[in-house]
Image (cartoon, rainbow, N blue to C red; front, side, top):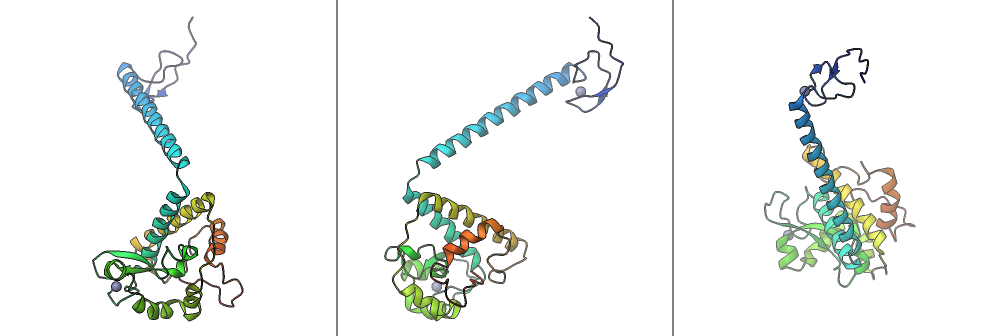
Length: 234
Ligand SMILES: [Zn+2]
Ligand SMILES: [Zn+2]
């Protein structure tokens, strides 16, 4: 059976050079390109299988994560965000400048252990040098006046009252983790491009609309009635 190929040139699927097909379904110019293409296809299939496997492993691991693990992962994400947010500020507990090249931590004003309801509250976490945070337990007597200067007495006093009882369920923790990773990624990108240093852009800048209501509701549990509820810079 001969197919009436009206001898139309084709582009070889492997080398992209035009050729005259001898058979109707011929997609490569010759045996050499046929082999190359077969190998390429095989590699692609293998890579796809591997990536699917990795994805499945990740999903399985994610499934068995406990609430505690999600809490820790969220804390890591929030802390990373805070360090970027405050990247141009001096230590919150001493005047070590932002240019200090030691280790920087995210320091909780009210400790996580005794105030679990404030553990992800952005007013409660600020970048501090490791000397204050790790060796002076936050250096709180020095932290307080600087915190008042930064966020105002009213907010500091709010933090000093009993922390709200918050029951974070896993879905909520996962959602916040996604939000904070995204926020950190965006700030970092802007900082890398020299477009912002730290607090000169409102925290909502560049955040997708859909993320914002969730974030705001979370950020300002007890500021709903105050006249100044704009978390500018946080
Ligand atoms: Zn070819
Ligand atoms: Zn310090």
